[in-house]
Length: 111
Length: 113
Image (tube, rainbow over all chains, first blue to last red; front, side, top):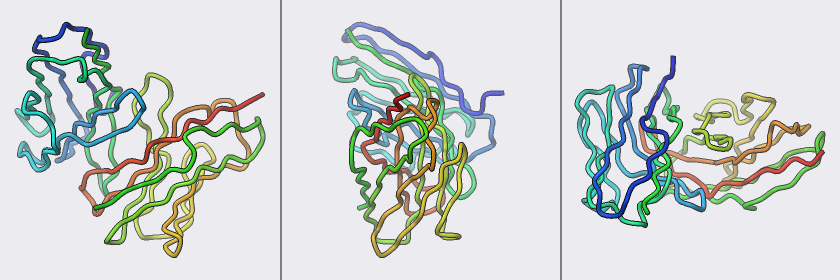
């Protein structure tokens, strides 16, 4: 069983479109995250949710809107996609002693 | 604010040689420290973690890291590199359990036969 699963794995879309990435974890964790990995492999936190509540919102454009319907799911919706949004987006959830488990990533390409 | 610096964006080692990846951190509180590995087109996998217990931490795949508070370092080593160790390695720090991770810039390891 996959602990943290994201869909889709690859996403190619045109500028201006709206798209969503879904994430689910079956580990029973309370905290979930979205991280962005840019073309230089640099990883940065975007959002964090704890028990469906937003607790971290780093300086991310408001075109990005996370939604957590329950503590096992954290989806990321992106409006009006721009070329600069092209990146790999990782979902993660928190275990004991802050051991984070990561999904396989979603490679978003905006053309 | 916390930060992590990984010295060397690329490291090339021969198969069987020592692997040494350097990580220095800054933190205003005792940190939690982690090393993650990323294989091509994959997610991040935890190699090992330091959470204020033993300063020498052993992880998976023969890796270990030593926490040195005086040097604010958490360098990763493996005595003998294997071809399968070729990957991107990330050092990360957090302030407390359940807190976000701040990552270093990553080090790509190339293993030569």
